[in-house]
Amino acid sequence: MVNLTINGIAVSVEENKTILEAAKHLHIKIPTLCYHKDLCVAGNCRVCVVEQVGNHKLVASCATPVAEGMEINTNTLKVRNCRKHIIELLLTEHREECTKCYRNGHCELQALSAEYQITNQDFIDLVPDKNYTVDRLSPAIEKDDSKCIRCQRCVRTCAEIQSVGAIAVAHKGSEMKISTFFDRSLDEVVCTNCGQCIVHCPTGALTEKSYVEKVWDALADPDTHVIVQTAPAVRVGLGEELGLGLGTRVTGKMVSALKRLGFDSVLDTNFTADLTIMEEGTELLTRLKRALVDDDPDVALPMATSCSPGWVKYIEHKYPEYLPNLSTCKSPQQMFGALAKTYYAKNVNVAPENIVSVSIMPCTAKKFEANRPEMKDSGYKDVDYVLTTRELAVMIKQAGIEFEKLNDEIFDSIMGVGSGAGAIFGATGGVMEAALRTAYEIVTGREVPFDNLEIIPVRGLEGVKEATVKIEGTVEAWNFLEGAELKCAITNGLENAHKLLEAIKRGDKFYHFIEIMACPGGCLGGGGQPFPVDNEIRLQRMNALYEEDRNLPIRKSHENPEIVQIYKEFLDEPLSHKSHKLLHTSYVK
Ligand code: HC0
Image (cartoon, rainbow, N blue to C red; front, top):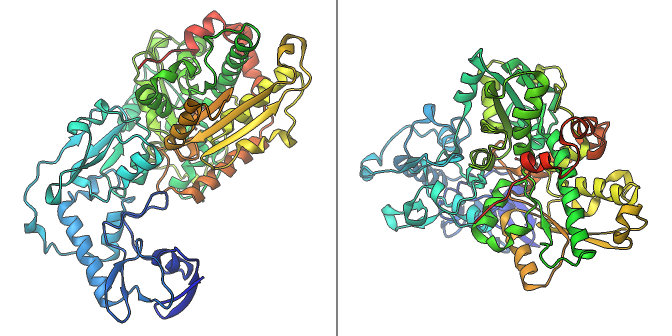
């Protein structure tokens, strides 16, 4: 342990801790901007400066390790003035239009400016007029350089967490900016649209493309039938944006709010998450049969999940040789869209051209996915508009709904019933757990051999998780799997996906089935979820999703009565001709 004093108070912390971390032990808050718990230390904004007693040196507390006998002051005149000047300088280069800014009220620079009562503009003449770029071409993410403070949190996020590198530092000195390959639009580079840069950006330099006004227009149009689907992870994030505690489960209030907003039908993506399990589980078993019984050399294993659009774009850009390994299943969002304008339209007797299909997602890549040209199998654009969790919160506030006072309501039908297996899709490992609950039971006729259906090895925030499920005692149709050991792996965050794929490529690892989610923690940590985010917050949302599962009456996808109904009335069976047409797709480089 290392002993030091901060503001005259003694503290002992482990070696290799920083002054910033030591101060936290004493509940002393030091302001930061370029620092983020998820990222490596950059130490470039210097707003976290503190003063060393004795030599009066100012040091960046986020980047300075503690030392034995160190004496630090965090609140001297020199420290305060220095921080104030740094904030003033940042504001000088930052286009101040707080009242019109997307991050108004959620901006870390704005908060610091308020905290330090910045009222003067002493440095305004130092900065020449600049030609800032505002990139609005992507259907998912907007980038406004005039709001950028060059802290590089986005750059580190894209490289460290996502292994994508779509954005990087370009030029030097006063010309330095965060740019893309040849300064092209995010729509034209390797960006996966995951939006992790947005949730790690302290200001409004990176934001989602908003479709709030389009949805208000649709709701106001008497000739449209506007339906909404809500993703699993929204129900454990939305409350944070509306004054409730971290990871509060707000499913019933969310449904109630959506009804008050005027949606004609409030439905659940968890329904198509269950449907995905039926289709993807059958696809996996079919691939296993081809590999194990037919000795088919062309069958691609491991089969990889395909429901995370950031991951799909990543594999298209970076590992196209593994595209045959992707499950042909569309994501639950897109399955829902295709069914909304076919199965649902027929059931409620509404012309599909009059249906506007909206989805609420914790994800910005879902906006890109809905705009992919291949996502029109219903004969129309399957999903018209995608809103993030944050955008839904904006609509609820604009409508004057006192969210925390709402009573719980239930989803409409049809396509409004989801199982607990569908709910846990929002957490890393959830798709795997849901698939195993169903596939194991189909193959053996018995429940998975885990207490209370909870497959613990696939749970948690670790980057790469592995599980082996031994199949013992099969029903007749699946005798070839008797004694087989199904090897699975789960990753979250694209850097971890990269590591896993490299291990598979080298031949170090072999799996039958892998689940990959683009965002840390899975969708619950998606780029469309409320600010801020770190692992403690992700864990709270994750626990809430598992609680949601435990509290639902149906916890296995194949037992969802609406799933049984859709196969009986419309799809016939998993991987049927109709399923293939509406629920499956293929991706190319
Ligand atoms: Fe997800 Fe999904 S679980 S990707 O993370 O599979 O966004 O929440 O909606 O589609 O269901 C996101 C979350 C979804 C889809 C589902 C999947």
